[in-house]
Image (cartoon, rainbow, N blue to C red; front, side):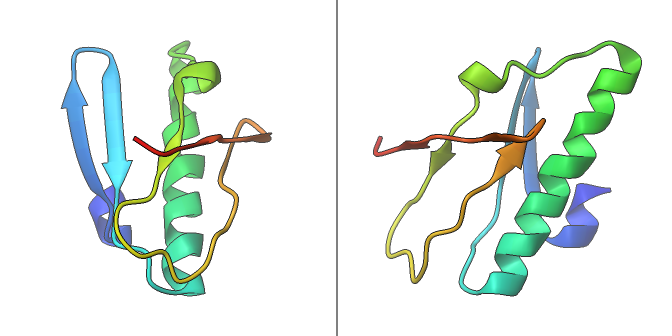
Length: 79
């Protein structure tokens, strides 16, 4: 389902990595939509640990935008 938005998803046990190349506002909106879709897990009592979620920019970032999970802004990490 997330592949429809151009999101690459990696799953391992109870961890999820979702990422994509973001070069414009449309891409940023697609990434946020993917995060919104991932929240469906709570409907199945699989809550996300928001305190373990973060954003990592790799390479040049033409602009910065905030991303949210459960109405919480995800922090940015440098590594």
